[in-house]
Image (cartoon, rainbow, N blue to C red):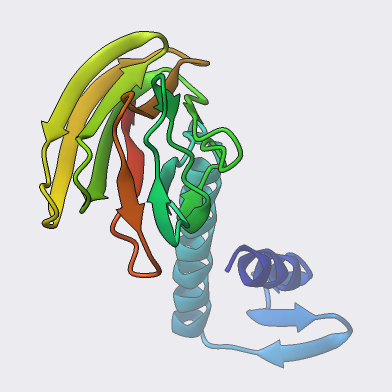
Length: 197
């Protein structure tokens, strides 16, 4: 759209109006117009200038980052149990706008100060506990524990967090716990920026 507006303005800049004889000169060619046609062209030209100004203003608005991610575990089977708490790594990308989540470490790193929302779903189906925690940096934000007893049980949690640039958010599987997943993406971790601060 900007390209077409700029080209139109370039064309209009080569158009000269000669008031004395009511002629429009485009390049070397002269065309006669009535006074009402000339006034209409002026109105259209003024309208185009206004639209270019509004386009330029929107381009000058402060650049706010767009951040949203959703990853599945990528597992085809079980993860755990472990002798200590471990970070759950979500490797299967569903959506990743802003590239703030690492599928290698399983850690989200805030690209700017703002309020973010995070949500996780983890499935347990074994006789092991399903215990997971949401962390901000090294601080536990919430803990969800289920005991599946061989049935399908989900650990689901979410939180709205004020993060500083560089803060980390991640999910830990507690010791002696186990999650299960397959290609249906039962285990997911998602988050997005609500607004910058």
